[in-house]
Each structure stands twice: as C-alpha cells, then as structure tokens.
Picture (tube, helix red, strand yellow):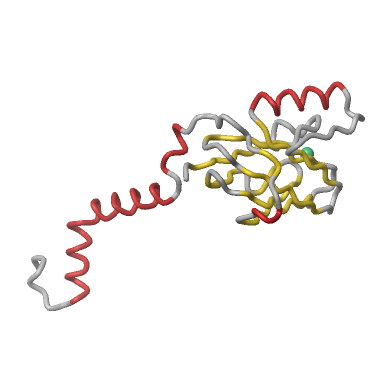
Length: 169
Ligand SMILES: [Cu+2]
C-alpha cells in the first residue's frame, strides 16, 4: 500500500515517520544539544574563578555530594553573574574537601597536601567535610568560562574532580 492511500491513521503515521525520521532525528538532536549547553566544547578557562558570595545574593542552591572517590554531579552549569549556594554533603567514610579553582590552583593545592598532609589549609573556595558532614559554600561567578573543582587530598585528587561551566549571561 502506498503512503497516503490508506484510511488508517496508524499507517499514515508510519509513512510520515518513514519519510521524515532522519530529519526529525536531526532536529531533536540539534534541539537537545542546543538546550544542553552547545558551546561548552570550545569554552576557554574563565579569567576569574569568582569570589565568596553573599547569602542575600544567592540565586540558586546546587547540591553536591562527595564520596569515595567522586563528586556527584561532577559537571555543573551556571550563568555569569550568578551566586550559587553549594549545599555540600560528604556521604563517604573519609574526610573530603571541596576546592574551587583553576587547573593550576588545584594541582598546587594537591601538591601542598601531599607534602604537608597534617596541615589544615584555609583559603577562599575551600571547605572541609568529615564523614556525614554537610556544609554550604556560597560562591559568586563573575566571568564566563571553565572553572574546576576537586578534592586535593592525597589519593583523592585523581578521581575527585569536577568542572563548572560558567555561561555568558
Ligand atoms: Cu576526598
């Protein structure tokens, strides 16, 4: 039976799908990739990692879970100018840290932790969590681009890494 000659709605539906499925698929793929941050592949490192934010400026809460040895999620999208309240929970059985920084900042921090594992570091963009502990980190993102985060503790740094994509407003 040729397309369009049947009175059956189902057969006509199949004809439409046969003819247009490749186009429909392409459109769906395009919309999906556009809707889910098409520009991240060529996004450069951000000129600034941002700074501690004010609670009165918070635009969103983002939950972040730490465990052995990963962050969930490990990819986060924010918009330039946003202040995020990261609600960070350590659901693992070991101490973990969350440190926001450039790739170089994080490598440097991991090196310091290896050399001085017992020294307690404090710096902006860093929180330390014991097993079961939950803390907040309020952070303002002022420049577009890619920022990273990690747990710089010895043995954790390789797996516990993540990326924040700051999209242009
Ligand atoms: Cu860790």
